[in-house]
Length: 90
Image 1 (spheres, rainbow, N blue to C red):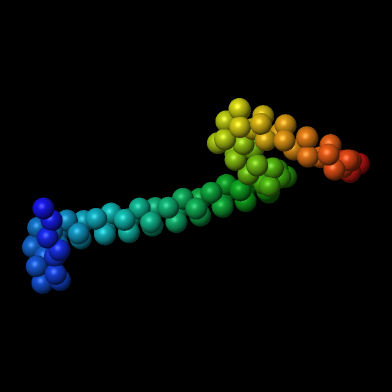
Image 2 (image 1 turned 30 degrees about the horizontal axis):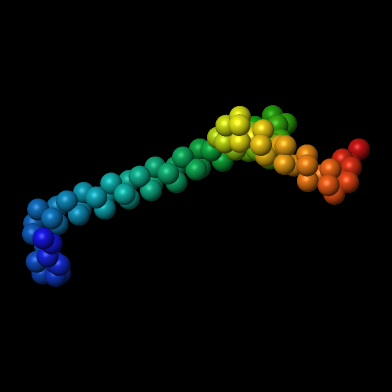
């Protein structure tokens, strides 16, 4: 049995729990933003060393997918390119 709480019926305990949840989410959001900046810096270093960051991103995405899914995707790409009689640029 649940009751709908009005804005005046929040107990101090619930308010404390709510505050902790909100603060935790805010902290995690800040950490995520910092990680994003760190990742940008790593890509910047890679770029400065002559590495192709577009390819690095593709490699990372493929690693996340797993070998089976990557093989399936590669096979479909080959089929589609063959069907379109597309030649690779030299």
